Image (cartoon, rainbow, N blue to C red):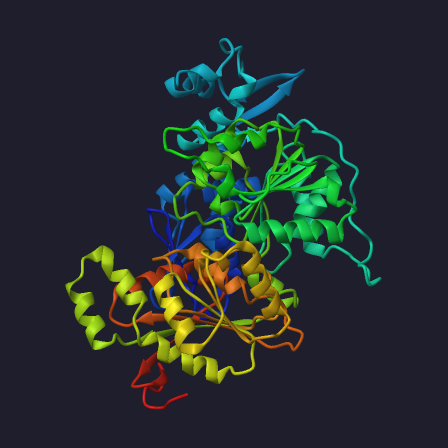
Length: 565
């Protein structure tokens, strides 16, 4: 493979990368900058150039000419004209439309008069303008800042927002220099780089992409300390709220009177307030407004942090459109959104400002080395009959709850006896049955928050070595010693969920042990295709899946189906 180029570029923007090539890793890192991974049939990885991926590349400093030159150097054939045009059109569009502050007045400017005329005639944004255009500039109503960005992005026109931000209510806060035990506290180099990248210029809003376990919370705290302003932090769940508050009180100079919790259990609005997406989107009926969205405007926030920004619900997107004068920081392990709202995230939160590949942090020792294994489990005969007769919508649950998966869980737990292990799944009936059969503690969303926290703490203290968890543990659960994760069922083909579940075990281990991630998949069912899709993001990050088969109570590998491990 050394003398052959490793990339096929198709006219529809698909990029086929051969992983057997000696330069594969370098090419993969480049494609990660400009495209998204779609699938991986055999040795070939299929990437796709999209509007948003090319806008993010432009925001990161790439030019259309450099991208095309690099693709030509990697490709086995000349670059199709359609691909050259796609790259040039989309990347050149970034920066052609800008929002600026002209002595307190919001102004939209364009690179050409034709572009201004085309935009001004768009009916969907006509109400955003405050009067007619004056040459290459047109005044925009201040309240329409988010709306016009979102609408233009949806039409294929990214807006570079350089209008700046108000400072918000001042707040004296800094990071502590040492722990309670006197050990020095210091940001890691990439955490400092992420904050610098976010605040580098007047467009200082956007998304920081770091692996699970890499300390994204520290990036948020450092941004807060740099900006010295009142801050609203939005998180996926109550456990995450508790962890954010604990980190703020432990690692910054903030006091308990300055940090508030805004959840279903407590609604304390303070200079730094940590809330859940769920409470913000709660309403008693579909006809009612969202009463808690007022949290966005009931204080003069200078910064809003969106933890796990890829989970941002649609109602929060709408409110975010109204607060574009406030700095916004999105934190995530993946830019993947299963709902396809990447354009909204780009327009309303901002472009990707900083990203570090998972394997890069692994090589530096900041996250644990991990091995991923997909275990194909035959269906129990009765379940196979039910599966064959079921509707398509019911099949995933039948396959996910395949009773033979319990045998695999038992064997894997025996194999990793004494190693802190989490077993995670989608279906509560399945988890309750495993809890009864294996006499294991179980955490689900049905359990009060205090009970969940108690079990998490007992697990971290080593009082028991195995913990069953539902999808409530997908996000923002800190289990530093968890070394093995066994996924018994998942949410269809969710790439987000696969990445987050692997992330539960990526904290570096004091023993130096490698993390082991097992995904149990019912062989011969739709779960196989879903699993292939779920693993796409991790494959892009450099985590290939080994596939093993479970036969007659014995686990066998691809290379030798006769020998049990």
